[in-house]
Amino acid sequence: MLEKALYGDRKYWMWIISLTGVMVIGGLFYLHQFRNGLTVTGMSRDVTWGLYIAQFTFLVGVAASAVMVVLPYYLHNYKAFGKITILGEFLAISAVTMCVLFIVVDMGQPFRVINLFLHPSPRSMMLWDTVALMGYLLLNVLISRVTLSAERKGIAPPHWIKPVIILSIPWAISIHTVTAFLYSGLAARPFWMTAVLAPRFLASAFASGPALLILVCLILRKVAKYDVGREPIQKLAVIATYAMCANVFFFLMEVFTAAYSNIPEHMAHFEYLYFGLGNHHALVPWMWTSAALAVLTLILLLNPKFRAKENLLVVACAALFASIWIDKGMGMVVTGFIPSTAGQVHEYFPSVTEIFVALGIWALGILMVTAFYKIALSLRRSAA
Amino acid sequence: MMDRRDFMKYAGLSGLSLASIPLLKKLSAAELPQGSSHATKQLAMVVNLRKCLELDNCTKCIEACNQTHNIPLIDNPDDNIRWIWKERFDRAFEDQEHEHLTESIRWSPLVVMCNHCENPPCVRVCPTQATWKREKDGIVMMDWHRCIGCRYCMAACPYGSRSFNWRDPRQHLAKIQPDYPTRTKGVVEKCTFCDERLSRGQLPSCVEACSEKALTFGDLSDHKSEVRELLSSAYTIRRKPSLGTGPQVYYIV
Image 1 (cartoon, rainbow over the protein chains, first blue to last red):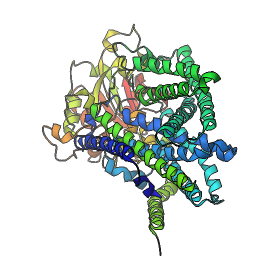
Image 2 (image 1 turned 135 degrees about the horizontal axis):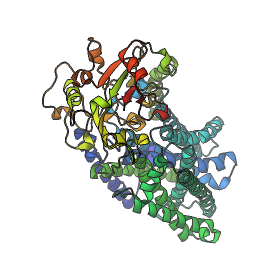
Image 3 (image 1 turned 120 degrees about the vertical axis):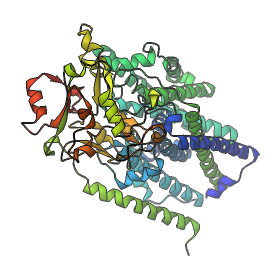
Image 4 (image 1 turned 180 degrees about the vertical axis):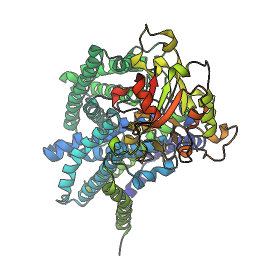
């Protein structure tokens, strides 16, 4: 099955080679970090997590969002998603792989990762997050493999896979919930310690994931001449619309609670994000961009006439994805540390090394998606 | 005959089950969260600020600690390692500070360190049990050979008491103290109330170094201990007690 990824035209190979190039560069930067320690990153004793953990958090959301195609198809028998469930599952596998890599590159002693399994601590949310993510990865590998090979043989998938697929639905919810618990259980960090963090994570994931999938489907139509049809894309747009509304709603809840209660520790983080504290306002332009993109997204998505036009839908999806990426992939994690536990404002800027390592991992994820989709589409074509 | 796919499948499954054995073993044997009542002793520190602030710019306790524990001197504050250090009152006690506070206290640098909490959040979050609360005396211990450097404990500590070795600390040691280990890059470290000295019957090096006798160290479960006497005779405050961590460093203001 895997060998299908090895047959492609010139453009396909150029794409693969470029991605590999970015991966190699990222790998070289990682070697630099490995040799000299995490001092080569922008992190510091005040801001101890940065771009890597933020990308991890964002990508757990992308992985979890596969449930938004799996659930309608398998639970509600929504046939229009038949062509894209496999795309969602492959996206999830690639995203979880990227998550694992982002965790590993963030570790001070990556060779000791085995200690997670040798000395597990059931009280640590990190253990449960590892269990949740690994389980989710296995479920999706199993499901995509079984369903795809049945499709190749032109037979119905075996019956035993159905309960496994059903299990993957709550499991998807769990991975992002437990990822939120990593943060929301810390009394030291008032910015994260909010019960709405997990719901908000899920809402933003179920908006950004389907938006990404829409873009991917449209790209596939263009470069691979594979058309999933209009209906699933429009349905995904509706899902993204609802989820984005929920995400913005949860965010406003947060702002109200912090601003009206007026507890300085809760307020300070939002002030830092949107107005800056003292001379420190690195994230301010980004956060307002994210907010503006969110508004644009809602205008385009909430109006069915706009949403139905594919070129406007592309703009809406790209804006939505960027808005949530900024919010979750830049703002959410580091702002938990700004101001610090001693009320000090120490800003964070990712270093060149960090950026290239992150790009390398993204390139690997995109490479995986490309190869997986190549396999899936080749099998479908040869079956057709 | 097994084909390539079957081989991969079985190899993957066997690897996975092998990897999960220690996990299951550990989880089944894992102990439930322990409250402080189980500890036979609870070591604590009382910092008398009236005495401590008497000498301006005194850093004897900090220097003693740095030398005893091979703590690197790194110029860049981002990469600093600190076990005991000075924090201004308005930062150490953010929730106690107000604008009419007596000037002699408000901007005063006071010594802070790991609070050896009764209910330490760092211990709760550590995924590898590389940091734990020692049952016999309540010290929050640290095993930097097991630490994977995920820095979750640093996110969880409300006091900034933990330091990460962002770079190789050995390159920043002027003199190596042979009877205490040095650390490697990529691990977290912190104050352990000088567990190595306590086991030799000595006091923590900061307590010993303080010429003003501003630091008092002892066992809170012992009614006659010096720390208990101080706590019952003077008004003391702790850092962020509302978070439920139960900090064991007390300050006489």
